[in-house]
Length: 256
Image (cartoon, rainbow, N blue to C red; front, side):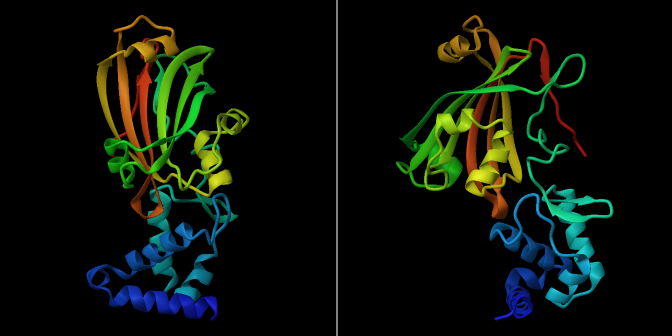
């Protein structure tokens, strides 16, 4: 079966669904593009077909494709390079590498963090972890603790939980031997692209073990950031609980 025939069948199936009946055509094309991204048809950092090629593939106008691609670019799933085309977003791309890192210094420009994985082990998911990752309680998860330092000053302790079925073979040695961003390694080694995240933030008293790992006085106030990160299709693939020292830093966000 040709790619064009598969695409026409996919459009027909999507158009016949109840949800699609109330969805603009460009939204249906957007959903098909996300499905192709999820299936790994185009890998992070790779170019996707041109708008003309996609229009022919889905048997729609180029304007419809452009509107779908515009939305995916606005959501940071795709990005454009002037004169070169449209590419799948990757955490290895310099301009989006630190998109999920919101910590900024009180003065000056952000500096690259030094990352050290303190622990990496396989455990059984607690009820709370299973609920966050939409897996069964007791399913295997990879639990890792990571320290981030800025200018050699410990600033963040991250406790990260990942579905064990997806992240087989993830070890502390593999993590510490990788020089790029953590999400970049998830892309290249495990084929998982983190595309969005939900966070909850609150002030907490430093737990004893966190205080020791950060080298701070126990019971000082820290910023606790709980994050659930999602890949395509709104599938949760990471639960992260970070504790931040904010003496010289603040947590920034942009509201549109």
